[in-house]
Image (cartoon, rainbow, N blue to C red; front, side):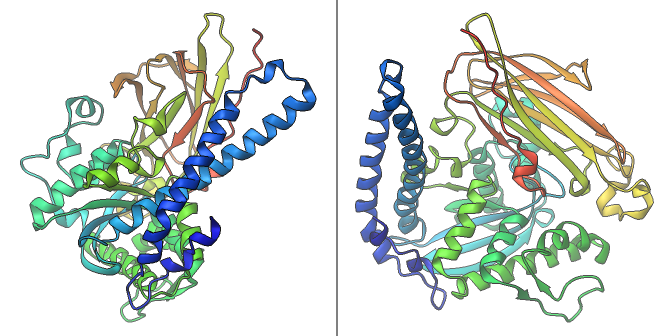
Length: 476
């Protein structure tokens, strides 16, 4: 199968991709993926409890390895099935790109501050528009969002593009963003893509440093963007360098434009591009939604689509998401850990604890040493230098939230349901140097599958935030 798909086909030449080989390879890749999945499913059905260890142990190892390969091949098959149509083989398409600012965290990553529209037409790629969330303004009347999510995330979901992703359900955020853009600018948006500055860092790993025009650059900002400096530059340094939101937005847009132009020019090889995008996908930093039903049927079933319900969230699925309540860019200084812990139960159901720790690492004099654009200057009630975060935890469908503690003491919390999943909401506030720990107890978990945990991607490395699940050694 490897010979049937050459990722160098995905290297743009003069701003255009040759999609014919990829489209031709797709049926063979899909057939191989289906065969591999069928084999994996059959191995899983074997009852190893009746086998001797000499057979059971190799079987378990083979099943595990095949499962990992099955997942990788399924990703390749989905990519091969999606890319030709989504890159405009049959018709031109316009994609709204949300560049999420992780310094002001939202459930899917960060506030959509920089916006762009990319047009693709039979492999040709063109950046046709750029804007910002603040320039888009308020939607009046608001975009319609279902009552279930409005109850959890407030009416801001449908009013401001910077708040469409207060919900972790990316299809909802994408549809709302599409409606807001079309209402303001007209035209038709065929899909929405969300990335964050760490995705740009991954792309710069593949492309190498990108020089920026030095004319008019304030002191302290780099003359070239690299995989090492792009995140601190865009999420911290820019606020010290520029005094207005407009200037900050313009720099953010210019940086995103430089990265896009490098990709469209063919500077990055196909394998290197796919490796960087795969890394972003694995870290939950890349989401895609399509307004075309055939494509969305595939996206809706895989993690790339970012849905909080459906096949990709079956079994014992948990989610922990963060939304900024400071109204500023203090999340650059927040350090987090999230861990899932299984608890032994005597009632026949599974129980789990979700353990969350947050620390405000801002300097003690943050109120005066950091720019107002970063601290918020108390505009929304949070003292300058402090951070306020809304923690949202999702449990598996049909389970219940039993209790919540903060620093060992029971606390009240908002209790909701979203697409059949229990949702707990709790707000915390931390002054510089403070740390807090929050635990949510989920009971009556009926799914027996291995648990999974999805967490909002932040400025930190995923491995430092999402800790390994603790599984209890429970007796029968």
